Image (cartoon, rainbow, N blue to C red):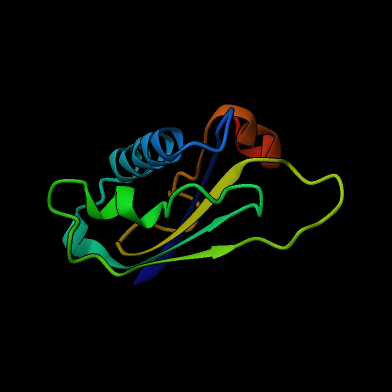
Length: 120
C-alpha cells in the first residue's frame, strides 16, 4: 500500500543554510516517526511559498545518507493572501503497512498552525 505522509516547516529567513537545515530536519523526523527507510519511498514532492528562493529543498533530501536515489521534485505553493510565510511543505509517497490513522504527519516551527488538529 502506498500512503501519503505530510509534513511542513518554516524558516525564519530565506537563506540557503536554513532551507537545507530545516528540510533535512523535517524529512528525518517524518522518517523516524513513521519507520520509513529510503527504499520504502516512491517519491517526494516539496513545495515552498514563493518567498523562498535561496535553495532547492530537494538538495537537502538527496544529501541525507541513503536518500540519493529517492525521486524528489520541488515546486512553489500558490500565493494566497494571508498564507503562512516562508513555509516548506512536503508530501512523501511511502510503501507501508500502516493505516491512514497510524501515519504520523509532522509539522514543525510555525507550520504547526497549519494542522492544529494533529497536535497531541
